[in-house]
Amino acid sequence: MIFGLSIICALIIVFLPFNAKSQVTVDTELGKLEVVNRAKDSLQNQILFLEKIEIRGNKKTKRRIITREIDIQPNVSYTFKELKELIKLDENKIFNTGLFNSVRAELEFIEGSENNIKIIFFVEERWYIWPSVIFKLADRNFSDWLFNQDAATDRFEYGFKFDQFNVRGLNERLSAMAQFGFKRRFYFGYNIPYLNKNQTFGMGLSFSFSELDQIDYTNIGNKRLFIDADSIFGDDGERQIISNTLTSNLFFNYRESYYNTHTMRLTYSRTTILEEILQFNEDYLGPNEDLEQDYLGLTYIFRRDFRDRNNYPLKGFLIDGRLTKIGLGIFNDIDQGNIQAHMAYFKPLKYNFNVASSFTGYTSYPRFQPYNTMEGLGFANNLLKGYELYVIQGQHYVMNKTELKKRIFSIEANLGKLMPLKQFRKIPIAAYFKVFYDHGYVQNNLPESSRTTVSPLLSNRYIYSYGAGLDIVTYYDAVVRFEYSINALNEGGFFINVKSGI
Image (cartoon, rainbow, N blue to C red; front, top):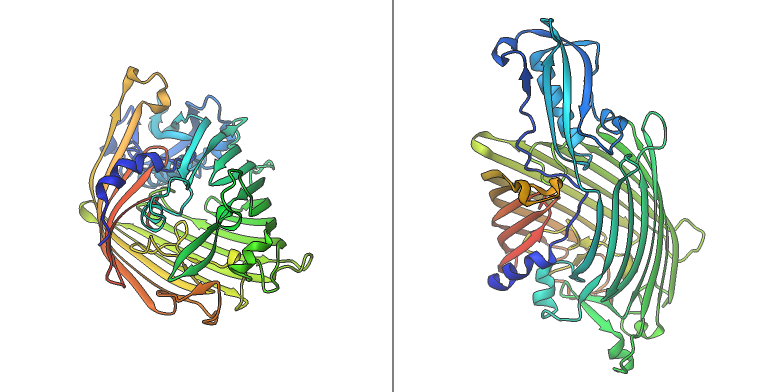
């Protein structure tokens, strides 16, 4: 049994990732259409003529960035019921841009008219400039660090990060980072979502360079083993770099509709390791005891997102398909490809119950893949609950995650004048109790003699987990999951994770 509740609860706030971009799930105003100059009850069967649409509260954000998300059109007649549903969808779309703390629509009758109306969208802009200090764990999750790495104090990353959201009021994002500690990493990125007049084409680019004096080199019993420079050269008091990676990305987006987006991404990557690493795993970068790995990669992504919220959806569905080719025949260091499909469905039920389920499938070629590019379950959201301590590598996998949850409460505190920055005055928070069942299968076709995956416990077999938990959702994309789960090895454990579990 894996415990440590008091330690985890004390430290979770320190290690909680924070994303200033994404929206708040707990917005009590959304969907509550206010009608001015007329009683709602008298409008149920009435046909209304929409004269105009107004936007109020956008001090920096350009009007066209907001109207891009609005489906209702002026000079068109709607029934009240139809209009109410369309406005609710438009509120969600505006909210999901990540630019606003709140979005609220108001229907107002034109003075002296029985049927002519205008719609006013009231928005409250977020805080867009985020200089921040980095202090986080280098490991995949808190439990991985606590139990697999024995809470080692040298596995922290620290530094400085700067994010400028909504640059020029056009929903652009500028990011820069200098990170030190376990992984020394420097990053720059710029994303322009809309380049053309119709706001359908966008592009972005990013550059990163990282240096490591400690890397994982193999997977034994579905747990990663690490080697550091001190183990190779001895402790001479100076930092020895044993691996570095340079990565650059150029991508183009085409948003054909409100919900469908196509992305093409071109990647260049160069990784080098010291020759001493080969004595631990000669297949780390390839089959020929390579010390360098250069490749160009191309990825196509199709995404249909019809969820009510991005960070913690309660209604709608998501389809995400990805086709990737690593190695385009220029450097000949690697020839690898993969296809991944992810589908998720969210449905509200009666009495504040919700059900959510997702399916993910992944397949890749060839049979042999370098250790540093081999995928599997255990990273980011490609994780079955109850397996936080494991990395299950393989060429193919499928998984399904299902949750039934009940909202316990949803409130919004207002700090008022105690908080001088109005973007932080409202503190929404909601809690959901849930039960869940996750299951999947990872196929690993490497021979038993492989030094990449040794004595795997969890690949090539049906794996599952079940349990219960509590999700806490608050503003600026903060989602914390407290979960107790039992897995296929009959291991029970209490874990804390961030972001939605589906």
